[in-house]
Image (cartoon, rainbow, N blue to C red; front, side, top):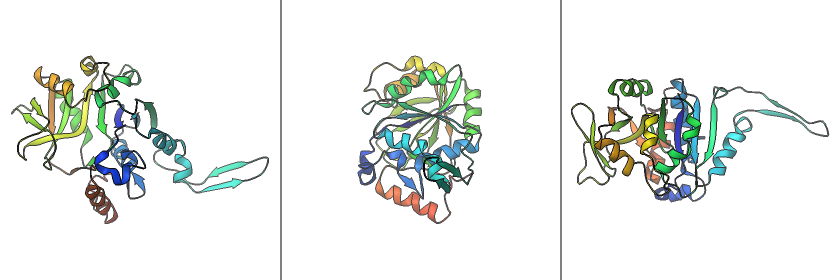
Length: 260
């Protein structure tokens, strides 16, 4: 099952880091947060990735283009008959990574629409953002999506107080998507989705539409947006304090998202 990851935002709330690199390339330990997210999916057998690039996307391209150089010891023979020998192997050797330039100023709905051709004939795919980690059980999201019959299943997590809130019915159908809730509590969009290809019919060819506004509300209004409730760890990296927090967890070997 293909995994689509939004990697194009400018990350203005993390300007200390994103002034120099795209947010998905901000590191946790010695690897970008994007790598951590991909490792989570790969742990559950999903190794075919489509990255929606935008702001400073060339840095993500270079990371994967030079992945062997960055993760292996290397012996070089110099001269007119050069030779390169990579000494180490890694568990990412079976990954497929599609690097799709979806535009620097494009919003998320249009980014998703632009990679429709890379989904191929697959009826279902996975979708997430390139700036948040969690100990999310991907097979459970897929199972819930197959069971509920919705066009999109969104992972609902508990809020930290500054995100749009989901209105959930007892049957886990999403009945509303409030961009700015009046109070903390309830559930929010955690950014790990299972998606049926019918969602593309809800996406317009307009650059400035966010998936989290028009399309998700339209899906909710038609009963086509469902939720998988995740009670475990989830943490975005939107601020410098969150960057420090995630790096501290990793450094102290207490990272809940490291399930591999």
